[in-house]
Length: 383
Image 1 (spheres, rainbow, N blue to C red):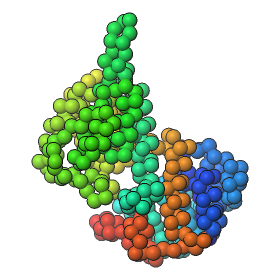
Image 2: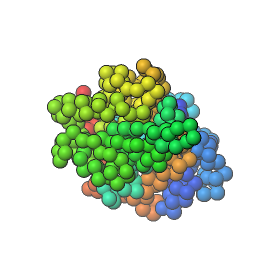
Image 3: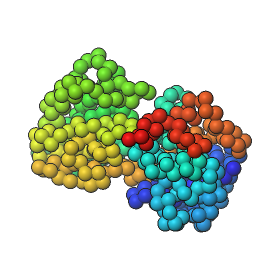
Image 4: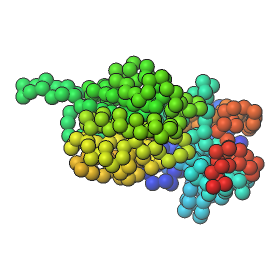
C-alpha cells in the first residue's frame, strides 16, 4: 500500500506529517512511502534525507494524491493549485486520510469525504487513553504551544521575568497567570517558573490542582471539590452560568495584578469560551500582555484577533495561531511519531486492518464507506 505525504499549502504551516525517522517506521510496517518534493523543507528535512530513509520523492502532486492508499497531512485538506482544486477531490475513491481536521468546523471537507468514500481520521479525535497515548497529537503539539507562548509573552511584557538583585536595586519577579491547566497550561507553568516568574493558574477541573502545585505554581479555584468542569476523557467542559459568573469575578481580581496572562481553554470542536472580556483588559497593568492559545477557535479574550498581535490600552494581545508551526522541526518530529504510531496500529504487514470495534480506530474515524461515523460531526452537519 502507498502512503503519500504532500507538502502543506496552508500559509504558515511549516510542519510535515512524516519525518525521515517516521518514514522508516512506516516502511518497516510493509508500506511504500512517497513524499512530495520539498515537503519537509520548512521543517529542515531535505529530499535527500527522505531518500536515505527509503522514501520515493514525487514531483507530480496530482499523481501523489490520486495513487495513494493513505494520505497523511498536518492541516486539513484544502484548495491546492497543484491539484487544480480541493485535495479531498484529488484523492482516489476509498483512500484513507489522516490530518488535524476539526470535523465540526470543516463541514464542506467532510461532505467531500462522504461523496468520495474516503475513510477520514482526525488526530483531534484520538481518544485520550493509556493505549493511545503515543498517538495523542493534541498533547504533543499543545506542549510546544505552552512552551513557546511563554517565550513570546516574555518578549511582549515591559518587565523582567525573574527576581533580580542588582547594585541599582531589586527587581521583583513578573507575575504570570495561566488560565487552563491542560497540557499547554502545565508546560506554560513549568516554562514560566524556569524563567523565574511568580506563577498562578486556574482551571475548572479541581483534579489538576496537585499537578499545578507540583510545578511550583499557586492554584486558584472558584469552588474547591466541584467537578462541574470535568468532561469526558479528561477534557474541560462547559460550566453553568453561576459558575462562570463567579469565575469571572475571581479572574478579574487576579488578572489585574498579572504582567503576563496565558489562556489555553479550548473545548474540542466548539468556539473557545470567553474568559477575558473587555472590562478585564481595561483593568490590566500597562505593559502587560495576553497570550491567547485558543485564538484558532476565536480566542479566550474578547478582543483577540486571530493571527494578529494588537495593543489595547497599553496591553499586548497576541492572537498568533498555530504556534507549534513556529518550532517546525520538533513539532514535526512529535506529530509524525503520533501519526506513524496510529497508522502502524491498524496497518499490519502492509495491509489495512480497520476494526470498527476498536475504540481507538472508531474514536478517531469520522467518515467511512460514504457515511459519517462521528456523532458530533453528524450533529454539526444537521445544523
